[in-house]
Amino acid sequence: MALDRLIEGILECKNPTVAGLDPKLDYIPAFLKEKAFAQYGETLEGAAAAILEFNKGLIDALCGIVPAIKPQCAYYELYGWQGVKTLHETIVYAKEKGMFVITDGKRNDIGTTMQAYAQAHLGSVAVGSQTPEPFGGDALTVNPYLGSDGVTPLLDVCKAQDKGIFILVKTSNPSSGELQDQVFESGETLYSTVGGLCEKWGEALPGKYGYSGVGAVVGATYPEQLRELRRSLPHTFFLVPGYGAQGGGAKDVAPAFDQNGLGAVINASRSIMTAWKKNGVPEQDYAKEAAKEAVRMRDEIVGEIGGLSRP
Ligand SMILES: O=C(O)c1cc(=O)[nH]c(=O)n1[C@@H]1O[C@H](COP(=O)(O)O)[C@@H](O)[C@H]1O
Image 1 (spheres, helix red, strand yellow):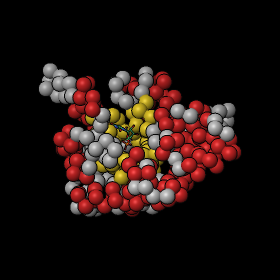
Image 2: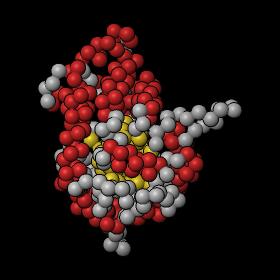
Image 3: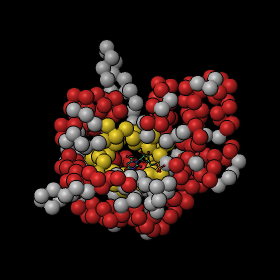
Image 4: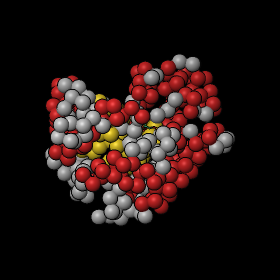
């Protein structure tokens, strides 16, 4: 089961974190942009080439330290089809380096369309006698707003292709409570109801460490909800964004973990990608500085939770 592979990567690296790759041209050192623009001009192609080099440098520096990356599709779509090609090339490169890839697409639609998203991001598609993998990520973030028939096509693809999904349960943004904290007549919140569905959907994808292939996204900015959901969702692995740039710290994310220091992977994007700018190091050292920040983040979180152990 796919999230077992993520858990194994976490245990090998002794690091329950994921590096978000949300590249904007502003984050990219001038020397990489100059090289790409000299070859392709100040065009979408030039931007996409600079992003690919930036990502490859980060992946080279982070692999072996961080078990996974999470590219957010929007930052690639921003640069048109050239950017989307870079998304694919980034996924392929990270997988070649042995990293687990969570494609952050937050996709959802009616069943037939969801089937297409599932095949695009986690599966394969028939083209004549061939069945190429369009993107090839290991897991996809998913919006549950359309209900079960928007999710079950993914479960079938996950089962057939050994992939996983992360369902938005309690997101990290300031307005997440507007809808997600609404209380039903039963007294249950919307986010806990969606959490319950994750447990149910996950029965189709059991894993060997007790966590299913249906994970939940719960923000680092809501530590109380993290604690509540960790207790109520024993088989649901958490993807926890909101550490770093959004203000979450090690103490905030600690309630996401179980007694073995497992059960969650904490994401940081900007704080890793832009560490070189924040710390004022020479731009050639951008990847080294990202790795330094990833190690600092790992040590802070592992220190807070008291280590990780194989169940
Ligand atoms: O699904 C996500 O990854 C996600 C869910 C959520 O609730 N909050 C959230 O910030 N994210 C994503 O996590 C990343 C956070 O980036 P930083 O704030 O730069 O670390 C972005 O790619 C967001 O799109």
